[in-house]
Every structure is written in structure tokens, then in C-alpha cells.
Image 1 (cartoon, rainbow, N blue to C red):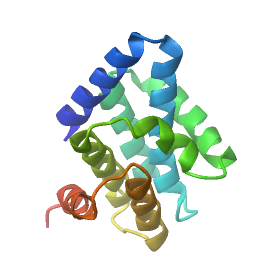
Image 2: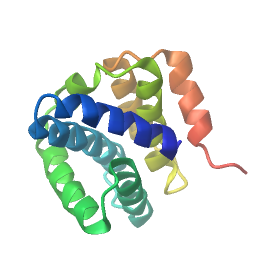
Image 3: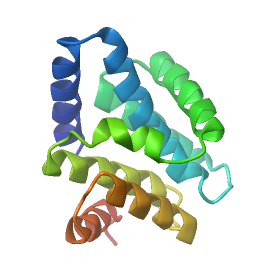
Image 4: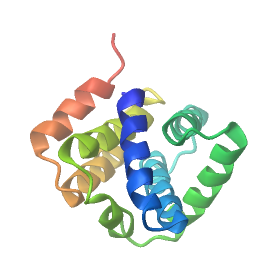
Length: 150
């Protein structure tokens, strides 16, 4: 999954680099903010979810831990200040269907990090899935793929 997401983000960054560096930062911030939306949906701060977000950001964007922490702080602030998921998802609608799937799978990975899927976490992921036009079957497939193997 990390390899696919990394490839996805490199593609997005390459396409955005044809435009501006600000667009790349905007995409990074939107994706990181969505991860924060998932982890904050249950209003409980869990270190395991924070660690999962940091690991995902480091691997996905090929950045070091300090850069990931900085991005996560900015994304957390942006997430808390936002009034809807729409401001994050509008940037991500241009993704290909398989890339949308990978994003939703990453969100499920964060949700599963604490071992419990809260109804509000699932609701956030479901809303994002709908806003980026991911088929419900793919939503379920991503959930099952991200689930810890028992």
C-alpha cells in the first residue's frame, strides 16, 4: 500500500510541479489534513494514531520526521479550523480511481491504528469517499485491506 501511495503522490507532485511548488504543498496539506480529520473524529487523542500519521506522511511524501511533524502540526491546525471536508477533497478529485482508493486505504490505516473503529471515524472516511467519487465497493475493499490481520 505504501508503495502505491508513494507512487501516487510522486505523480501528483510531478504534475503539480508543472504548475507551482505551492500546489504541491497544498496537495500535501490536504492529504495530511484528511488523515487528521480521521484521527480527530472520535475526539480522543491517541498516540498510536499520531504515530501512524507520522509514518504515513514520512513514507508518502518522502520527508524526514521533522518535516512530517511540521506538516502534521499545520494539518492539525487546518483540520481544526475547517468547517467541512470539501475544502480538502476538491483538490483530490482529479485523482485516478485507483489513487482515490489508495487515499481511502491510508485513512482506514489511521483509523485502525488504535485498534478500534469509532462510528465517527468511519463516517469521516465515508464522507471523503463520497466527495472524491469513490465507488462504495472500493470503499469497503479499502477498509478490508487496511484491517489488521488477525
